[in-house]
Length: 599
Image (tube, rainbow, N blue to C red; front, side, top):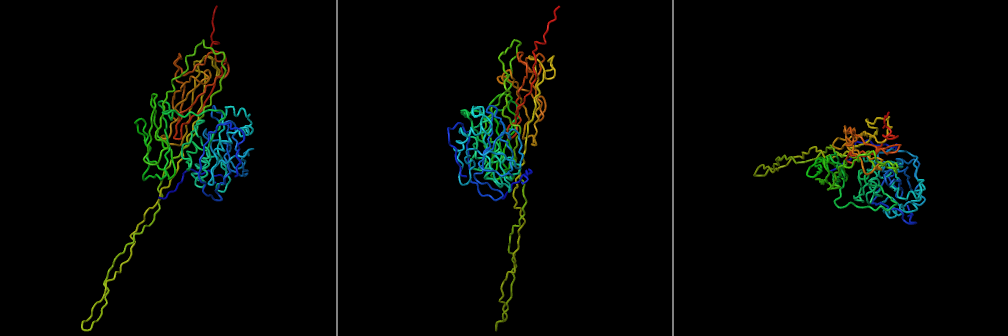
């Protein structure tokens, strides 16, 4: 059956729509979490083509503790790029995952030609890039020194263990007659905006060799290892989540694989969550015989029906469910009547976070050696996007002939006179029939496939203020020993149906007196679903049963900052979360409010 693939999304119009020297000097200094795959490049046209060797690498320095980018990434490439190059700025995959949007820029592209020539990064039909050469290059002392110099950071600091290098392959090519440059992540985002327009013309580059030039061998920085087929075209969702990246670490931090039976996911008790897997299909799945995906969650059946997918494509499939009210391990089995699933068995650990609140502070508590710790900054994800295929029949009427002979047999006389006998009819039968087309108009159409893209975003705030029972508080100024409130607002926005998503449901706060460790308070959702309000749970040590956290009486004068992690906003593309913090100013202690009145 014929098919065509379309999308309802408007295309982003961009105003326009090697011999390699491998660097092997010196000792290897870093650990390269990089793997690669490849495939043939096929052929191109003058308006849509890539020249092998015209590639590069975007390097971003990452804080190893927080997983957050530091400074502006640098693009390295061996070749001179045209002045009219269309690009998307210096934005890393981690920036995009944290909520940055794709924004095209014409010209003004800044890049650096490395002092030591890059090895081939992207494979082509004539040969594969050398993974070992790439690892050897970026893990070497020489590359580390070059990168440190270019970023303006000392070599010792870069390689001391505080930082990691995040690498992304870049392809420079001609698309629709225009010079463009982009990472694999940007290519996938751009292809979504073009409703598959990039993939249609540059598939072997944009959806195979570019994203498969680098991927993780093992999970790191909250990003997954790639376990798919490294020799085939990849979907946009797979590229966005798992491809086009490598990580270099300068301190030996051996990877410990999960223990047998260890959970794949961790959820919180009594929480609405989305559990998703990817459904792949080699053949077309259409409405005549759609796919049904079944999630069996400890005996409870959830189904996603009427799934349609064009041949060679994939889609996230999911179920929305509520976790148990008590801690337990949940086994989820997933099956489908068509296609192939990325996972068939998922183990989820359901935990209760309300188990470690701070102890009752005492008036006699002391901490004479306290120093204010830095506020944490967990890896966060504040936006997500996912696509759902749908199909519509494309009517195409064709006349299908059915010619049949209509017989009309008649006698044809041929009289002949015979002497002594008379006239004799020596005639014959002749069929005066004709051919008649009994055909009919037949709809020999096909299914057109449309990709509907959905998005979700999480925004929030935390307001720390003195509790209403604090007698001497003025604005955000208060004395130690009293309580503070935390009012968190979580704003979840989406264009998706409710069945796709769940708004933020959980917030957890940590405190400086415990070094943002050891003890924490679980907040309670007071109101709202997509616009939710959360506050501290009522404190069992509070005389008035307030939603308060008490500062230790010994806390020194200065800023008292509460760190809050907002989480459990769920989408088929994963959980959204974000870091929040706010403070009160401490001056004096509650002992200053005590007095005696003697005569």
